[in-house]
Image (cartoon, rainbow, N blue to C red; front, side):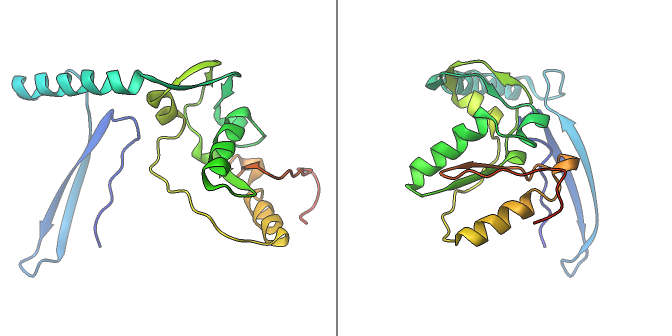
Length: 182
């Protein structure tokens, strides 16, 4: 087994992991600590200057406009995890067009940023804020009954705002959060 370490998605911190192995190569113990990546970090000046150079170079590319939105995109957690939102439509419409599929689904828990992105230009940076994960898009075949069952499963934790709320393109669904299952 390999340790998987992921402190955040915005490159503001990293993990330092120390592993102690036995002579036979098995893990004896480990220690980890979260280290903030800030200008105050104790690093060699030449390393710090090189990091700043790469950050500036990356920022130019990340801030370049790659598209635009005619409407505000509300990525607030309580919105995307409990109701249809323009940002959910944005992602599902893009997925559906890319796959040329009948239906596309994107769960609200995958939408981040927790703010309203005003209508206007979109950059790589804004898209990475909205969806910072390296997820893959997959295409599957399912019946209408299977799709309904999936949507019902995704809504099981609706009241606790778990992130399973399904944004969908190519189909519509409604539900009554006060009704019994089914």
